[in-house]
Image 1 (cartoon, rainbow, N blue to C red):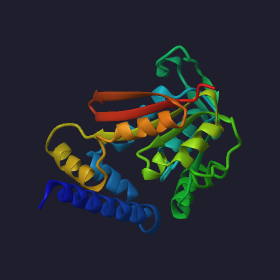
Image 2: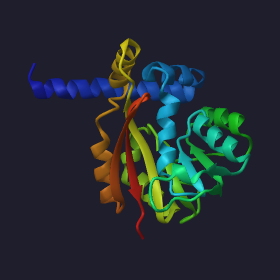
Image 3: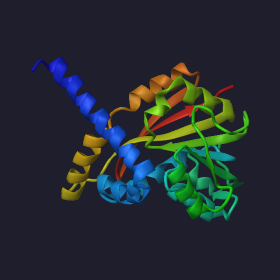
Image 4: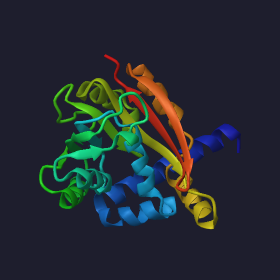
Length: 237
């Protein structure tokens, strides 16, 4: 089989598996999301998500595609039902500040939105499409996405993110990750790459964000949680 054909076949198989996984975990079997996340990350999934907080630009904050709402719940627990406190040490640059800021999530899947709302309380999760965010223009300072589906690459999605961000605001995307080394990590890596290809596709998002008018930087973090890739897109004006 010619290499080009094999490459296309692999992409097709991976895309088919990914679409099936998203449908199952976000619509038909939302109860299995946490188990699947744990399996493909060797237990590091929630630590991977939390890396986004280090690069937030302050609040108000919006999480797009919150899934079952674990990250949102953590934010809201830190600051009560309506606010998020982050110590100055959590901010890596000159925008460092401490304080409390509101947090809200938008989730497209109705079953997943209900699950996230049950964890976070009424008003914390709004059902909506990232390509038509039900959020006022220039109303948030931070947008967070963790392991988003391919919709994040669409110009309509990036235009909406730019619209809702205030000038100087940031979109922080935890885009890919690999588990820590060890047998469990190797097995999890196989599952992760088979189903999503996570861990090496960050450049596509960076290019799309630049084309949408963002100032972009990419970060790779390593630790006991494995390796995490983040793309940080800032609205400059």
